[in-house]
Image (cartoon, rainbow, N blue to C red; front, side, top):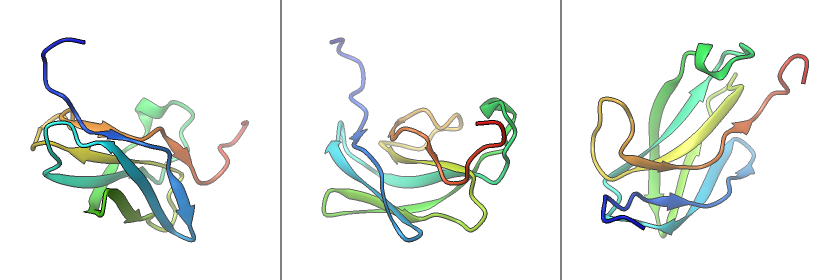
Length: 103
């Protein structure tokens, strides 16, 4: 492993109603804040979907957020610092809330 930044690592997402949560497996260099990234679009290509961001909570080693109504897909992210490209973070895998057409 290189000597670059150690970003936070998150575990698997669990859903309880509309609340998503994921354990922090490794805080890396520290977690400054967390977000839920979500899309209301069901475009077949992920890169064609507009993504939105909302605040998430970090508490007792868990990142959690309410999944907005109408969400098709989301992921949770724990950031070590602000970044214009949203790249200073560790994320969960994508979670599909609604089945995508043709899948």
